[in-house]
Image (cartoon, rainbow over all chains, first blue to last red):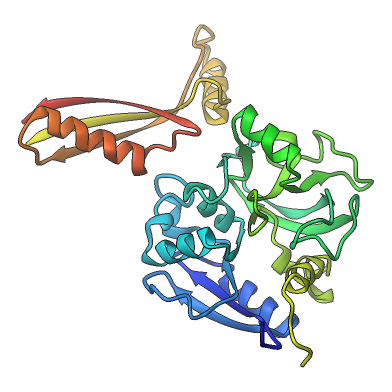
Length: 238
Length: 82
């Protein structure tokens, strides 16, 4: 790659509300280029990384992410992903990736039936991915969640494959890193908070790393997620 | 023209937390014999089709591609001629 900074494309759906958080973080905190991509566009503007941000695309009508996946831009995002492009889905973005079939499983209603908005602890499962290379297995990150439908579900066979292939990147844990039922905020199977596809290019997570990158936002642990992602591209020194 | 009435519910293997909460509410009202409450969606639409078979095909396609997510939901439907 003959460039010194990455170009992030942040997709904006009607109802997205974390698009500016993601844009701000990658551009102003991490120092890379960013562009908004309106959902009706059909051009990814040569983005190196596509971010599907959090929010309530199309009012969460029918199912979370179900209608957004048919937006014109998603045809391009799906083609980009199938061609090996890097796509990150955060919260509603994760739901859209599942609905579009780029990631397995679905996000069900939280078992508490409540919208849950708080900082949670995430345990890093391994550092062998483009999303966790700046972390170590067992590290605990403090990252906020804000969702009503984050209860990850998939068939037992799908879960087995995800686990065996190391596709589970983050799990909800307690302050000591133990995976407990009490630390599971939504009922996700195996406390799963974030996964990637089998080739490690597409990832989705319910917690919001983009909201934990500056000291005034309580935690800066989210920066390690973006640092990992940026590390995974070979950039020319500026 | 055909009337297509679709019912979408969570698959039986999936815990329906809304259904459980509503069941608890019904029990609180004294109707303790009520069990297995499942909440779903009811979608009604008309389909401009030349035959019942075509209306059925369109309904199924809409269900499979958009209205229901087969990972977590089942759907049933009925078709009546208008």
